[in-house]
Amino acid sequence: MITWWEGQLIPRNGYQCWQLLPPQHSLAWDVGTSNGQAAFSLGEHYEQVIGSDISESQLKHALQHPRVRYIHTPVSMSDDELVALLGGENSVDLVTVAEAVHWFDLPKFYSLVKRVLRKPGGVIAVWGYNASVTRPTLDGVVKRFYETAKPFQDRKTQYLWEGYRTLPFPFQSVGLGSEGEPLPLEIPKEMSFEGILRMLRSSSAVTAAKGQGVDLLSKEVIEELETAWGGADLVRTVTCKAFMLARKV
Ligand SMILES: C[S@@+](CC[C@H](N)C(=O)[O-])C[C@H]1O[C@@H](n2cnc3c(N)ncnc32)[C@H](O)[C@@H]1O
Image 1 (cartoon, rainbow, N blue to C red):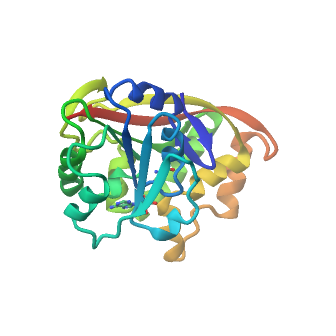
Image 2: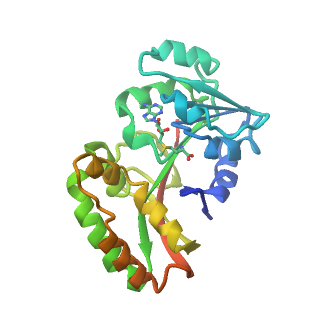
């Protein structure tokens, strides 16, 4: 269901599933789009896709697609300006947020979503993954890594670490996860040892710890991971855990 692409989990069939939900497929808005991996995939299913991000530098690397337009939305932008850029109230059929909603000011974001989603029928879908990987020999080592990372977690990533179980999500259910009970997704994936390391390195706690002079992925930790993996050259099937919530207005 989900493919691993440059360190990100993308629910590809998820798009097929959600595209059945909104009655119209005119406009999708991917928020916190970063380099546009989700927006690009949505471009295959929607007449028009807008990918937005507060970071202009992330957008510079965005994947180009003829039906996808990227917009920079700095924190200084007012909600009214953003609504106008998106085509006005009731104009968006699907809002997606991949691995980013935990960073947002949720009451502000949800009120904006309620304004722009087409009524009735507009759908919001958010998903994330907290980099759990189940493989018996690796589990213990990865768990220990996350324990050492805990003190460096940003408060906002707490939702992510809790698998979005505590994430407020005030919309009507469409049967794909609900507030308090996200839809769990287990994704078997072929991964290299380098891929696992890349996934762990991408954690914001690793960067925060580094800023405080702590190397969470020290030589010793990497060696321990490598032993649990069985060798740096092996490609193995692991199960990654993701979670999704989709609702309509
Ligand atoms: C992990 S990346 C998202 C990955 C991306 N959605 C994908 O499909 O691969 C998180 C992104 O959220 C963006 N972001 C954080 N706060 C934001 C906000 N309030 N509004 C829009 N984007 C935001 C960051 O700049 C960053 O690019």
